[in-house]
Length: 90
Image 1: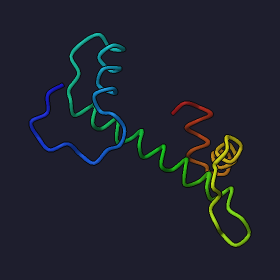
Image 2: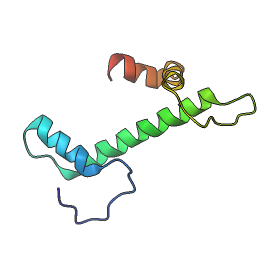
Image 3: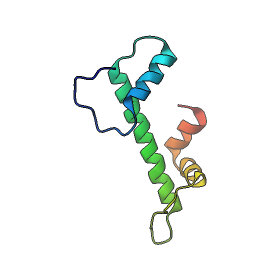
Image 4: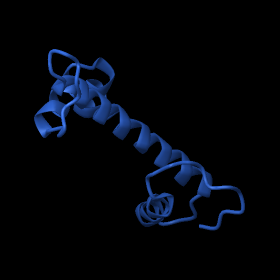
C-alpha cells in the first residue's frame, strides 16, 4: 500500500489492516478502504475502553487503573448499539 498523502492520526496499523483485507479478499484493495476500516476499528476500541472505564469508576467518578474484561462486557451489555454489534454481528 503506497500512500502519497499525509497519514491520518490513527493508532491502528493501517498497513496491517490493508494486508488482512488483501489476504481475506484475494484481490486489489483500495488503500482508502484500509484507512477507513482502521479508523472504524479505532473508534470502536476507544468506545469500549471509555465505556469500560466508566463501568469501573468509583463512586467519586475516578477511573480505574485497570480495565477488566468484566468491565468491558458490562459496558457492552449496557450500551444498546455496542450490544447489538457484539451479539448480532452487525
